[in-house]
Length: 120
Image 1 (spheres, one colour):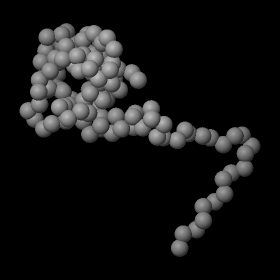
Image 2 (image 1 turned 90 degrees about the vertical axis):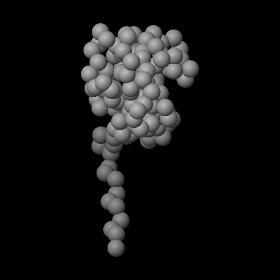
Image 3 (image 1 turned 180 degrees about the vertical axis):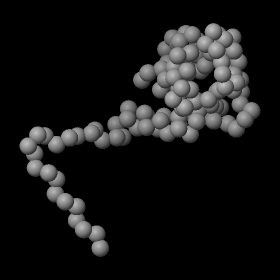
Image 4 (image 1 turned 90 degrees about the horizontal axis):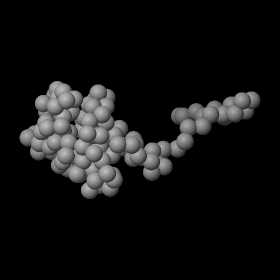
């Protein structure tokens, strides 16, 4: 899995889904938590881009809302997943667990599927 999925998994835990006020964390604490969850050797600076990607897609939020990229190294902030982020996490976990059937398209020249039975 990629780092953004691992970060979403971390944000989906009970500590980050609490109502405000949430615990304030920094990049070092996030890196330590990811290491404890089994992500090997993550440098705190490596979390900035995936976290900004999650925020940009609307899958996570931080308080304060705007943190400059240069400030992330020493910043303390609240971070939590959005409902959209939790939905995306569930989709990604289902995809990796084989829960979603593969998309198939009919071969060229194959007959169309039979029509569905009428409902009464």
